[in-house]
Every structure is written in C-alpha cells, then in structure tokens.
Image (tube, rainbow, N blue to C red; front, side, top):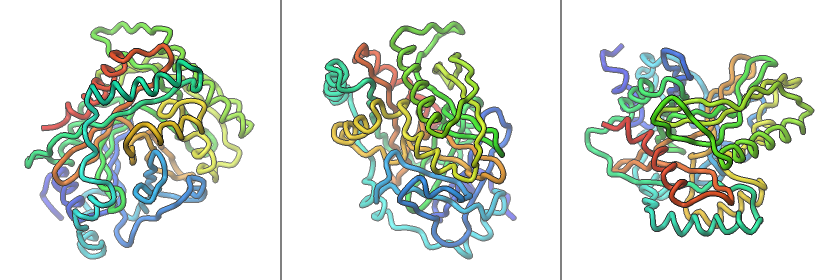
Length: 365
C-alpha cells in the first residue's frame, strides 16, 4: 500500500484530521492501533454512558464543551491499512482557528513565581485542615520546531519507556496528544479486573529508593480511597503492595487491587466512581474538584483524564492520562502535577514537576 515509515503515516493521519489512537501496553513489543474510518466519533456527557460501549475512550479531567468524552469506533486495527479509507471517508482537514477557539493555542508556562503563588494558596487549605490532599498541576509551553514529528516522538517514547503505557491520539474534538503513563485506572478481561493506587514520587540516582512519611501518607490516601470506592460495589479486592516501580527516570509507590466484577457490562459506572482518583485530584473528592477548578488557573483538558481501549467482550486497558503533551500547530504544551499535603514543601514539589515534565522533553528531537 505504501512504503512510508510508520511515523509518517501517523503524521499524515493527523494532517488529515483522522480519528485514531496508537498505543503500546507496558512490556509489549509492538503497538496497537485503532481508527474510525467514517463519521464523527461518539461524544458523551457522562462517564456512565460508557456502559455497553466498545472503542478507544478519551476522557478529560472534567467533561466540558471544550473537552468532551470521546469514543473512537475501532473500524481499522492495522496501521498500514489506515491510508486507504481515510481519503475516501473522513471529513476534510479542520481549520487551525477551530482549535484556537476551542482550546487556545498553547496554555502558557507556569513559571516558578506563578507556581509559588499557587502553591501557597493550595498549601494554606491543607494546613488549615480544609483539605487532606490537593494535586497542583502546571503546564509548560515550548515552540514546535518545523522538524517535529508526533509519530516519530511516539516511537521514541515507545523505545525509551518500555514499562509505561505509551500513546498518541488525534480527533477533531480533542486535537493531538502524546504521552507515557505509568498508572492503570481499570483493566481486565471477563470477570478478572485490576486497578492501582499510584502515588508518591522519587527521582533516584541509584537502584535504592527510600520513602519519607509524606510519600507514604500520600500513597495511603489513594489506597484508602480506592478501597472505599470499590466497597460501594460490594467488591473486596485482593491487595498487593505497596511496592516501588520505575517509570522513566522516576520511582513511584504502587498498590495493586485485583477483583471480580459480577456485572462486567457496566464499566462506565465503575470508572465514574473511580475517576478522578486522589492521585490526580485530592481529598475530599468533591471539595478538591471545586478548589482546583476555582484556583488552578487553567483548563487541564485531557491531562489527568483517562484513555484506552474499552471492550468488555475482549480486553479493557484504561490508563490515567499522565506525562503528556498537547500538540498544536506552533507549540507543544507539556503537563505535570504533584500531590500536596500539609507537610509538602515548595521546592520539593516544583522539582517533582520538573522531573515529570522531562519525561516528554526527553523524546523530542
């Protein structure tokens, strides 16, 4: 069909405004691909509406008109086939002005001074006991070089981060996103399902990782939350952890939860109960959501949402949208966050976000 390198096929699909996703599961040797070859992807106002659906799910941190919940229908599952139907059936290329009006060209750069002011605001609510935990995120915008290739960067990430879920997706509604996530939200087949508590971050220079009270406390909060949410479905999971995992140049604390689902046809209901977890939001859940919306100062869009293949008849792999960048015509916007407790310090949290932003910076050419 074509002798083009795979990365050029991906770049061409983005140029043609196709609805597709390419992703590589942790420890697998080759990526998987899904594309919708005709019509617009399905949009939903509520996560629970994913019940009974099959396809590649792209969920924002918070569903809005600018960031809808999207499902790509998997019409095509082989990358070399992608170029044939795309020219025949897909709508024309979207105007760059549409993205600018919907999302804005880039999201600015949260520099140290601005981050410091936000940290003080967030930290105050933790010290005075209003919140148990808050996740403060930031964005960093860089100019897009003329030679930048989203497809090539995906394959760079695939090679550099073998233990993470590496992804690149594009739809007219979301734009283009690329990332490498270490965090499972929900995965399973038949009645065997899994989720994880992933919280606490270190950036070791050696193989030995030690964990301070702040990181252990942060991990405990996420673990307790997941146990509470699962118990509302009368689920008593098998628990393994916490233990240390590596993700790129970072280390995290992870606890695994394995469980059976008596009604696996309703994953949307469970996803709605789990998302967003305290690993990307904070506690108490509703109060933390309002606080972030009112104080963080920008729209996270799809950063800290979730994505992946949903197929209750086959295999479901849903990950949290972390360590990612939003790819626009002239800029790349990188996102990162860290969990704050009353014991958090400004310099430590800033350094953590710097290390997380490096995950995407390291795959750029």
